[in-house]
Image 1: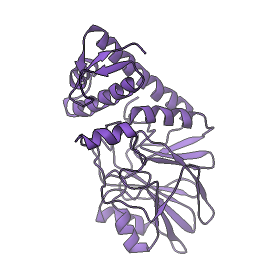
Image 2 (image 1 turned 60 degrees about the vertical axis):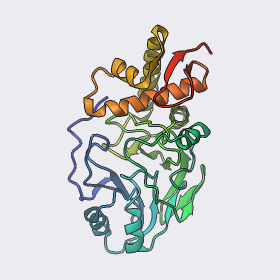
Image 3 (image 1 turned 90 degrees about the horizontal axis):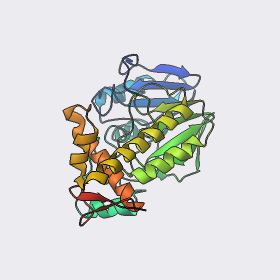
Image 4 (image 1 turned 120 degrees about the vertical axis):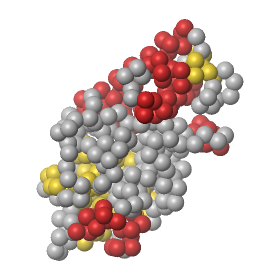
Length: 305
């Protein structure tokens, strides 16, 4: 499944998606963010802003302009601390005084293996981390955030980032960057962990969801089908990596060139990170092993679990 030109809203304009829910597109399109970051306004009087977005004075003005007479922003909720989702929280705090809710700071929820890779000097890739982000109120998995006429269930969904959460709203779910319709989620160590990502996919798959509202792109109207596709997509990448390693040991870079044959050159680095995420997962499951220390530059060999 690839991006579709059908999703092309005007940045800065609040569009009603269903009663009590509006979306404002941030003006930050890119190969990693598609048309831009989706900021959601939930509620009819006391509003929650879900994912304020990048540090943009124009987007801040658009969010504040969408607050109608009789409405106030009472909650700012950040799904994860990538630079395209969390930085504008600071501006919203200054403008509204509302507190920021999130799972934690940049390193919250990071798995032990990813913490070790980071300690060894591996830097993140992709959207970039908002290292200054710190919520006013830390929320835990299963906790509920309640406002004026709305309630959200916090679902910790690490994988894209350790502090990533989804938010269940009745039979809808704000899935941020974990499940999107336009592309598969980037999993880039040490920020992303594929073992966690797959577990989070299967956890969401166990729910009975009507629609997903993602961090980028259009609503996902077949949540179960999309999750099935994401899981199968990752399993097919795993199979291709294992088949290549059957022939000879290889690095993540060599495997990315061999497997991602239709990927534009500008995205090959992200593909390499995805392959490395698979190799770390396969190592943890005893199906592959690095020739030497675990690192992004290491060659890996096939093992039998």
